[in-house]
Length: 317
Image 1 (tube, rainbow, N blue to C red):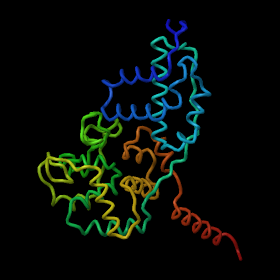
Image 2 (image 1 turned 30 degrees about the vertical axis):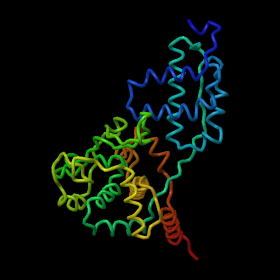
Image 3 (image 1 turned 60 degrees about the horizontal axis):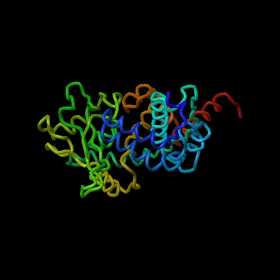
């Protein structure tokens, strides 16, 4: 096999060949994401390493470097997938001895999330429920379902079952890097199926919310946020939320905060992790545990109050 020959093949070459093979098997947005991570992160640090000399030490040093360890947990997971899959490709094509396994070890960063406080959510909901704009109710939908920005922008009226009180997630809107070098814009917006099978899901929706949005209902094929055949740009809707928060006197937060808020309130209310994981569309409940199982100050205060009440009932002063 090829790995017995004294041929110097750099890891950058293996990555390039692997990406070329993957191109026709994955979505355009995934291809662009992999390509950017390879060019910006992996090749810069590991590209000039001879493939057969790539070892655990070099890879683990890469993941534990300041640059990579500061990336989001999701991005680090994608980098792990790219490296493992490309090494496997190299082994299968005879560029590396199959017995030379590599174990990737990284320190998983503790996910830092931002969510609305209970007071902020009360203020925001009070504002949203009294507006006559479907865009405001779209924000409210996100607060009570945890769906992503791209998912609410891709939501059509046909995805809402008013009888069974549920929403089906069937598509998502994304803005990705434009691979056309002659294009006037660096990015372009696309609509596609959700990023994974677990992201395709049906979520119960509260009746009060269905009653609020029903009066806006139009053709099944229309997108909810625009009530037309064209979908809302994610950047435009993110900016809309920014303006809403400003009008409510709430600190500037990104759209994903709504998803974090839904998850946090769900845990506070006692929802089990498996149910929450399926509603959020996570591929594994372990992801939900890593990101959302934490104690808010309200939960801590409640626990302390319960402790005081308990001690008062059993201790004589």
